[in-house]
Image (cartoon, rainbow, N blue to C red; front, side, top):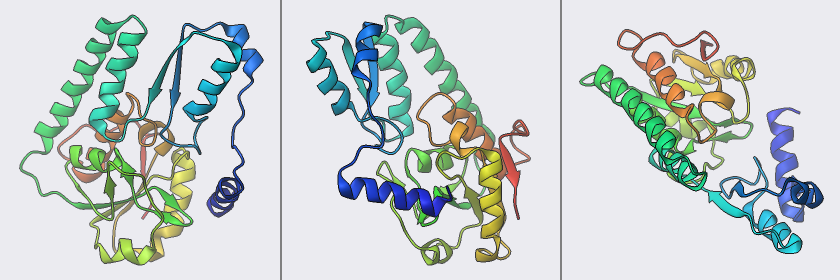
Length: 243
């Protein structure tokens, strides 16, 4: 479906109280899990934790349930620590988080003292959504200033005039769930809305919208967009110039 069709479908399901996903309780029972990771971050992306809890109550399952709901980059890193602890691998989690922190520090040092471009991240294109949750943190960590953004809060629909009035120096198109090819196609279509402004696409599905370790890859990719002479060039499947 097109972005507009996806948005309409999700809104219709939400309005009618329908679930986008269902849980196969018998399959869950057959797995006999010790630990279940679930989420309350986004009902569009995955089953909400309440459905899992209801199924476990029905089955009489005593699995440990960890609900993840990070809203900032710092909370995403904290969730790695939490999962490692509950999974019995706290040392591995600590090692991973230290490595990710070191990479963030390297980007921060590389862009220190440079002008911070005003960055409009387009999290959805039809209708347009301003970036929320941890995405403004990615821009900040990459050496930019996020505009028309909602740090630590849910992203919300907005208007193209809101982005235009923010006068971004760079536009980064990162539509939720789309890889680089899908993001590039949408970014190219948006070029007439931002004449003279560099427009970039990024592999949003891998590097921007999933709250995990690859967000640090996203920071490094955005830093390469904003400060290409200061940081290493990312892999070719991470970013693409659209206009």
